[in-house]
Figure 1 (cartoon, rainbow, N blue to C red):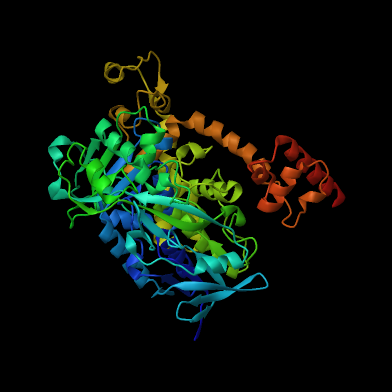
Figure 2 (figure 1 turned 180 degrees about the horizontal axis):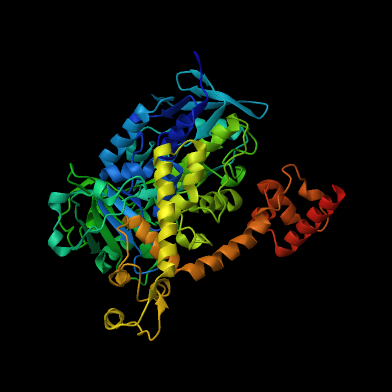
Length: 625
């Protein structure tokens, strides 16, 4: 049996959902294949969306017209803005999810989209002829002829779950693994790695003693993930989370049983995540720490299961029970699901173009944890871009490439395809060189015009976006023209916030720039102030307050663009360029950088190599003129 479609998306996790929605919304006949429809948008690990830097990704996904932000706004049970003690560049929104509702809402969204069909089936073969994608074949030998395929297999390829010496050949949450596709990919010349991740135990809430833990409340001021929503639209009663800690007894139990951990006994082959280690790894790597914090989080409103954030493990069940019960509040815990580690096949992402298309197979794209990343948010961001670029490929249009200066998504993809990753890659604010420009609050300013051009942002939403930008510009202009004269009232307000008194007229915008003051605190002195939405006022404050720093970073971006705009030929053989070191020749031929700036970020390419490339490009330019 042969079916003809435009795009096949292999895998229904967070990457697959965004990829399928983007391609269908852009008019392509799309089929999303999942081994189990119960795995669509599943949260097999932490029941949350966002967090440090990850919140930026979700806001960017939403700004481009993706679904993750809208879905968590519908299904959150607690929300909190992180890093508020620092500057707005690193503010990061995080929300606890009702994981069952999150999954159900996303699945229902997929089911309602025109051009999109979801199918429970395993893809066992990718059909390729002469380096060009032709289709996919299912476990039942059904062939789907298509023009593009997006691999979003997550942690399912040849997956196995480990808990002590108990090893189960399965995917996350003990769903069926995909066992046959790995061999096909190897035969197509794709290099696979073996990675590992893990998850903590779940416990019955009624067996925990919360009087020994510290309550963690959500924020009173709700900030939506989606720019389409207002705080009033999504405000609801929030649930409590809790904080507790491991102790020396916990660590003793772990150390005494390290020989029973498959991670330390050599049973686990895969490389684990550096920035989200198991509790065994924490105890060994940070031996000087007397305790590690644990967050006890509800898995949803209609379940008694609690998630123990910060204590993933692959130790045997009896050791798990012993170590968890040493933790204050967990002394009588009843485990409902054991912690486990999971191993799976993924790729070396340097095999991909920046568009997320494989270099050696036209029309084959890849996204998510299969690319060596970790996290729901990183996966969803890649899925959205892969979906967009698969459509662009079919339409024979240039791909969408987000620069590092334009989006965290650009940083994420550039890091993966340029440097690869020998361990599960995690997004962090420190990876973004221009993070003052890439704040989560201005993701719509940076990306919504592009989402509108792509057809992923509605006319209604785009009109509202333009109105918001107009309001921001007008208010900044108005505030910049107001002069505050010295008076008793003015000095009283300045004294209240421990700010230096003024003796001559000062522009309101200059007062806002003072570290101890802001747009809101000075509103009492602004008699002509308009009643503006919260997000407009937020932008006015940030753009005025950080004007000097923003201008400085924009100058840095201009220099960055000079390098990025020096485009390298796709078919350039770097072994023919005299003066390049052999290592640089090999790396450049393998990565195939799109620009001199891209080449500068390849490990093994030195400043001297870049000078040689620059001279070569100038010589070629003179030859062609």
